[in-house]
Length: 420
Ligand code: NAD
Image (cartoon, rainbow, N blue to C red; front, side, top):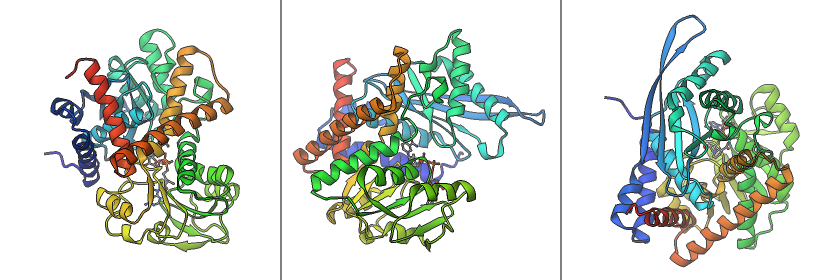
């Protein structure tokens, strides 16, 4: 029997629990609830790849299409040694809710391949990426299912996949995948879109709370794409001081705040934020519990639990990571009056600019960075207000409000299509 890792079970159970709660509040039709509890389709594929040593290796992969009532499925592809179908199912359903809460004309999907890219050469990765598309090609398409990068997949991998799909179609079909390099019809502004969307949400939250964030402190867990860009933009757009950051090697603290360019240069040179000159080493627990205006979890899931939630002192938690707060911790933080910007909303800037990429690919006409930022800001504001209004109407916390907005929209589309 296949063992499902704990984290996969957690994500799957959490996604089911969140849907159940929202469905009960809006008194969702039982048939609609049953439909939304499971993916509409999933494909399991086996791939053969010639490795550099001349041997053939067999890989297993998946693509899950959770729900396309509102439009084609959209969601990333992960390359990870611990990938499981249950994680992919949970992530696909979160994409349905994320695209719905942002009111994008899309559904939710997710894909994965069980592999360890860190031990593979560039040419082996290219052959695996192309093999995955050959096996799944007929399942994908700009009007069916549009993948994007996720854990351990890059814009270069998206480029190979778009090329392989175009070969299968006999014509350039770049719109099949987003997160492509700019030179291959990617979108301006995609690089920092996730963090930027989160920062726009923080700005909206501060207005709601009547908080002036200029000069206030922030802490960031995780210093990859989402976390490092949050550092840059918290300074640039909010005038904040980032006093603590971390990565998988450790956490650092400086009460005067870190300069973005200097810290990035250090990270590039040494591979980590640790041992940055003038910074004190702190524990991950201490970082999460700092007295800051905004805490950005931007690394892993389930890092704020019922154990550490009572000690969290941030005024706002902006969830750039997916699922960083467990359901038990959610209730504790809500009762403490901490304002949480839920992942469905807070990190949806990435998929929103991916949608912009699809639109630009379909038009064959490309926007400049300023236009992308402006359109993203408008979308984030509209979604933020919808969640906030729903939270007031139903007297529920923001996460449940985001679910209510999302589930209602998908259920309405399914009803109008005659699915129940
Ligand atoms: P990434 O791989 O670029 O960065 C992850 C960072 O987390 C790295 O700096 C890594 O060192 C750090 N990290 C790993 N383990 C850690 C630990 N125990 N403590 C502290 N830091 C640790 O990934 P990313 O794209 O920035 O994604 C981060 C989170 O944001 C994930 O949950 C992801 O699902 C979510 N997210 C990302 C995007 C996006 O567009 N990049 C979009 C939506 C959601």
